[in-house]
Image (cartoon, rainbow, N blue to C red; front, side, top):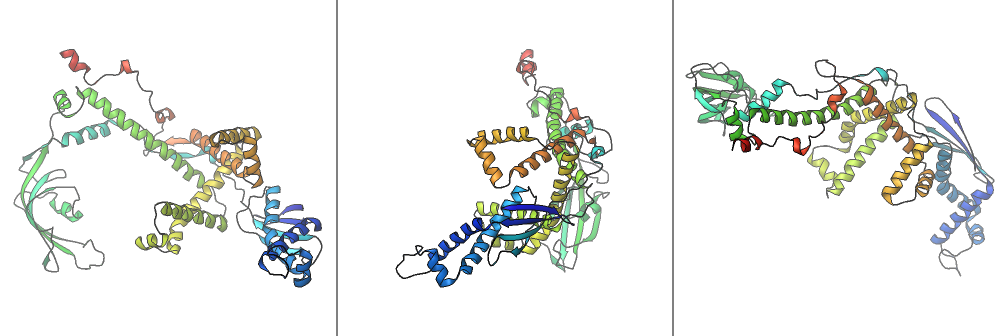
Length: 457
């Protein structure tokens, strides 16, 4: 088989393929063997009728047409692999010679992945949450613990967020009392948003003895009439937090001192914030580099990504024993609305793919054969295969280029996350060292929560 490739406009290439007569005749012979399985000829068992008799009865063209139908996809695939064509859509194939006799000649015009330029990738500024908890955040976390042990004291002032008010509440809808929203001596925390926002808005600034009346939209969007509230404020109580001292720490935590409690709170919050910052770094860097792509994205690539996401969803549902149609009905969607929902993230994923490929190329991060061999050796060791056998299998199906691209994109993302400028939501610079988890202290250096208590004894 002879093949050539030529570039066309609009991210397309044309593969020119010629299959010599002897090679194609093997395909014709195989086609007649398949035909023999489907016909009955006197004196021959199914599948055993010779080709010459089949040709005599049905004509040579029947086998040739069957061979073209079966073999054309394989010839096309071989040409794609031979020239390492990164196709993103089905081909348009036209047979130009050989339909009746002689060598088979055809052209395959196919859309390929475009090459874009992620200009500006080396000057990206990425915002992530600060990996270091502030003093106020640590104080707030400790205060949340103190609130669990707060005592309520009656105050002679207007209610504010965080206060508890004792109220009688009446709620009607179109003249009928609303069950669950009509009660007496109800304890309500102002600012909690536990019912509707309008309750908090009207209780802020209210004092004991006040009556407030107001309306609020019904939570059911199909109900046009508003809810009508009447609330009588009977008492305002302030939550008084216990003193933050060592006695509180011993009684309500595993620590002997406030200092140790605070240090542990800071450590736990720091680990959580580092984890959040690291995840945000990956996601926000991907979004930032994708935003550099101003080229028009081929619709075929977006459709491919949408289909891949749908198939992934279908697979996960099947693993859970769920029917896809039943799932769509349960969530109120159709295949069309599901595809529409996936469109925006699919387009973003395609842009990230193209951008990372560009960065890998511009930064010289596309892996060489030595890196590919190292990766194949690792993959083979994990799966119990021989590296050479794995290479041959991947090469046979044209997956070596995909592996090379994936490794290049991975290296590009690593380079970006190490080199983009990092700032927090205030625009302040973030030191990358703050994204690393602190080394655990040696066991003999750790301050046991009971050490201080044991020394006192």
